[in-house]
Amino acid sequence: MAVGTTRLAPAGSVLYREGSTTEVVTLLLEGIVKMESVARNGMSVLLGVRQAGDIIGEIDRRPHPASAQTVTAARMLIVGGSAFRRFLEGNTHAALTLMQVLSDRIRESDRRRIEYGSMSVRGRLARLLVELSQRYGTSDFRGSVVIGLPLTQSEIASLIGASPVSTARALQELREAGLVETGRRSIRILDLAALDWDAERRT
Image (cartoon, rainbow, N blue to C red; front, side, top):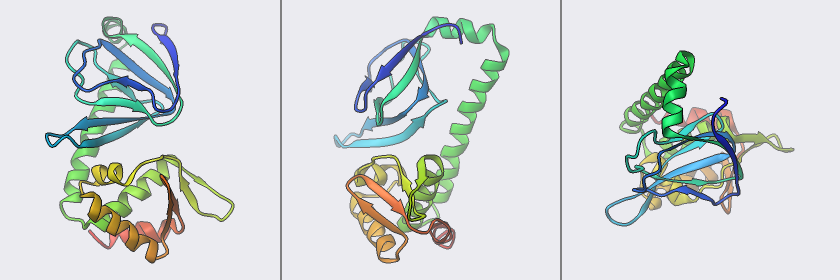
């Protein structure tokens, strides 16, 4: 893409806040960004996580439905909304690719709603950890998989649609089963195959 400006942002940078209006589209080149919204009771809810290759922002001046904050250091391509529209108008392949990305997000959201409606909290947690390990996991010297995404228990609870108390209880069960180890904002998968099986048998 020939348009736009490259920006570097350290971890913890707020790219935009929920309700603000910025006619800017951001292509995430490197790093991880979390999308959060504030519920009516004032609690912050983690809606999702974006990674390299994802697009966030608005092409018009509608209010942002969620806040965006970098989890890790990030490198982004910032493009004005009008310039991005012109780019899509002149690039059919890019427009179709964007449509596919949006379609995949809707399909993923629908899949989660269907799965979570029939799974226990432990099953939802196990499924999420398997998915996070596939996207952000790295193997260590022990043969375990370390999830390189620093999330709090409250943020994990938001992602699986459960209360923090229920999530903490399910996480404790997985620790007692020898499937995971946890530290401050860190999770190590001790047996990925067994964790995947644990999620499947709780559907």
